[in-house]
Amino acid sequence: MLPIVQISLDVTSLEEALATAELARRAGVDWLEAGTPLILAEGLHGVRALRERFPGVPIVADLKTMDGGYLEAEMMAKAGATHVVVMARAHEETLKCVVQAGRDYGVKVMGDNLGCPDMVAGAKFIEDLGCDFVIHHIGYDERRGIVAAGRRMPSPLDQLREVVAAVHVPVQAVGGLSIEQAIRTPEFGALLVVIGAPLAIDDAAFKTAGGDLEDKLRFICERVHAYGDIPLSKR
View 1 (cartoon, rainbow, N blue to C red):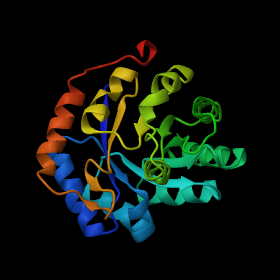
View 2: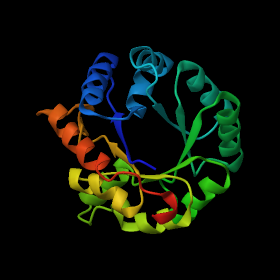
View 3: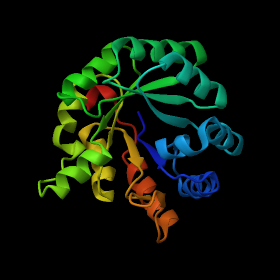
View 4: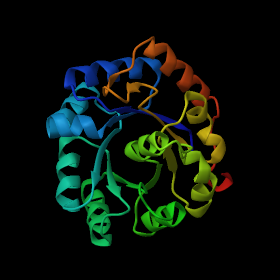
């Protein structure tokens, strides 16, 4: 599998999301993610606008679905999403409903293990219920709360090798990574590299980060794509 670079559009303005997506595509980014803040602000309209502007580009709808799984996945699929996100800590029936909607509407399902007491077991649970991808995720509030308490910030790299070894589907690592850490995740077997807050998005203001973001993204894409084809069986 060729490593993939995905930008998480964790902004609250559709105009800003589209402009950032244009910049990201010029830089070589493969997938676009309608981040949770964008979905909360713009809903289906935001996903439709991304689809209209970027026909043929994979679009991840980061719904973080916890209930009503079939309807949420169906609505996002009809709006143009190619991937939807469901939480491992949702009820088992919710995951099954999202997976069924994915099959019915031709979208891939990404299961997110954020908040699982056992992150490796959570990843395996996601795969066993039919999800096509695993998101190994240390959450925004968790990271900030632990740092505020004066403790070491947890990283998805802490258990990434164990998560990758536990499943057979592609994995992405999310949550507080530096640019160099994100670029190195394919070395851990996680072939979907996600660039969001704080790398491309200001994680305090939820706006596009300052500086030369296009050059930063181009550098990331060149480094990630240089890995070439990595067989999933040889992670």
